[in-house]
Image (tube, helix red, strand yellow):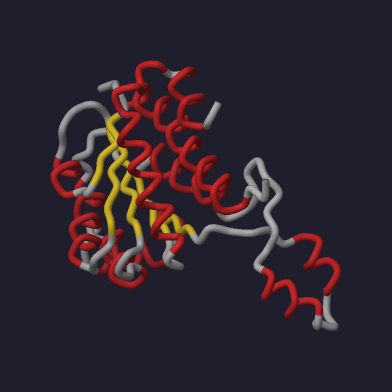
Amino acid sequence: MNKIDELIERYPALEEQKDNIIKAYEIIKKSYEKGNKLLIAGNGGSAADSNHIVGELMKSFELHRKIDDDLYKELEKSEFYRDELLNSLQGALPTISLNNHESLNSAFLNDVNPTATFAQQIVGYGNKDDVFLGISTSGNSKNIVMAAVVAKAKGLKVIGLTGSKDSDLKKVADLTIQAPETRTFKIQEYHLPIYHALCLMLEDYFFNEK
């Protein structure tokens, strides 16, 4: 059974979002294939989800991940920590949580505009064909929508991860996955298996050597 079918079997209410989850996977996969990156942001529990996703994509999740052959060959030449590095490092899919830059975010919040901190990071980090994943249970979090607007202006693909209600983020995003709930904690309970499935699918595509 593939990852998406397993997800729907465990969470039947997500059946109506199956196509959107697959499309989100394809958008992120194509971005990584081009050598681009994934940027993520959220508030509160969704900030924790942003960091969680980084942890799944920047190191091994379920599969053993070999590092790039060229990097391996270069590290073999090193006289410092050669064996430890070769035995420790894992393949990574470049992913940045915009929540993690406390000094930058607090400075911009204090000096300029508290709702534009994520948008400012899109200005600095975002490149054409990167992907911005905005997580908002309401879909109307101003700082997430502002970041999405800037991302679209810079040529990034934008994916929203929200609850069931239509929202400003859905209007801006290229694609929105809507958890089939309206209460915050219940929406978040669906967000986790959704992004776990996405991470598993991406890992399988890029690192499964079968």
